[in-house]
Structures are given as structure tokens and as C-alpha cells.
Length: 219
Image 1: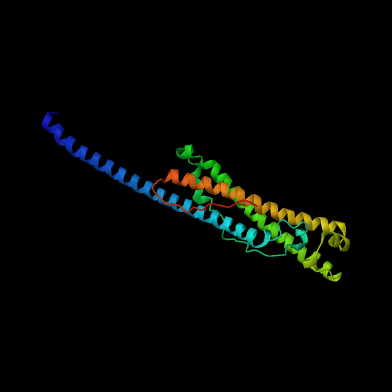
Image 2 (image 1 turned 90 degrees about the horizontal axis):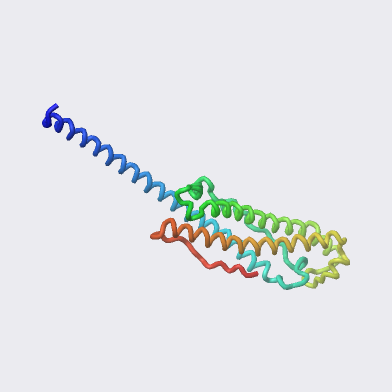
């Protein structure tokens, strides 16, 4: 085959190869852009959900727990209250599975995903602890105190124990301490995880803005 004939075959072939390469590069870039957009949305949603969980517990702490926190008879003076169960505040693990991707391993996304799952369970356990105490106080403690004419505004631990069977007193004390412990510890751990997730998000997308607040975790 002479040179002219060879070039006649080469130029169309080169054009076909270049066209295929450009098409592949364009498609790959489009898919990467879509993947980045989905990850950005997922991170923002996770941060927002975590913020709402923190705000919900902070409101419970401020509106209920802190008012009688230092009262030695708080097991009786803490009024029963119900909470929204916040069924919509759940992390979408499927959308966050990219945190396990090896190419982002230096950002330690694996640890963050595990932390988020733990915080979800902590949050739900805390709400259950509140409902358990409220249910016990309303159904067991208050009817008994009312029967003996004891007002919770004039409550003392001695009066409570004198009017209640010992195991009932111990139980309401345990339930109350559990509520305080769960709320305080979950606020602290959620605040820590929020900072980690925010740090990861900024490292992953340094030019993007993400929601952020300073969490007051002091009991």
C-alpha cells in the first residue's frame, strides 16, 4: 500500500477514534457531574436532618429538663410531656453509600456513615425514654400521689417514698435519670458528628456552602 492510500484510510480512522473519545469523555464528565450533584444533595439533607434532631433535643432540654435539673426531687417535679416522634428525621443510607467509596477514603467517610447510623439510634432511643417515663408517671405515679393528696408542687422525695411502694419510687427515679442522661449524651455526640460531617462536606466540595451552627452541649 502506497503512502497516499495509507493516508486515505488513516484520516477517517483518526476522525472516528477522536469522535468516539470525545463522546466517551463528554458522557463520563456528565455522569461525574450528576454523581457530584447527588452527593451534594445527600450531604445537605443529612446535615439538615442532624440539625433538626439536635434542635429537637435542645428544645426538650431547655423547655423541660433544665427547669428542674438541679432539683433533688426532679424525678417527681419534672412534669410529664410528650414529644413529636419525628418519623421524618431518618437518614437515607442509600443516598449516603458513596461515603464508603475507596476514592474518598482519605476523608474517612466510612466512619461518618457509621456515626450517623449510631446517632439515628441514639435519637430514637432518647425519644422512647421520654415516652416511657411520661407513660409511667401519668399512669402509675400521679394517680397514686393524687390518691394520697400530695401535690407535685409541694413534693419531696420523703413524701414520695412514704406514699409509694419502694420499687415505684426507684423506677421513676431510674426513668427520669435515663431521660436526662440520654438527652445530654445524645446532644453531645450529635454535635460531634455534625462537625465531622460538615468538615467532610467542605473537604469534598470546598466551593460549596453547607448549613452550620454551634451546638451548645453543656448540661
